[in-house]
Length: 85
Image (cartoon, rainbow, N blue to C red; front, top):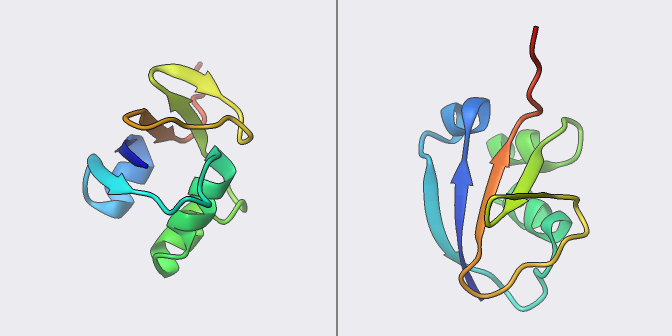
């Protein structure tokens, strides 16, 4: 399955790019599986996506939880929680 991943805020700064198109293995169907797959890219990715810090996700501009499933061509965005004053 091919999707587009968008990175925002601190995540974008750490990985040094804002988007990428990826082809996922068949076993990656949910956001939590995608986070795990990304964490396997290396130490920097592990720090972002191993679950020790909160990373929110949206699929096609709709906020979703970690059990949400993806479809071919979806746009998945990752961003840290937003706080305000």
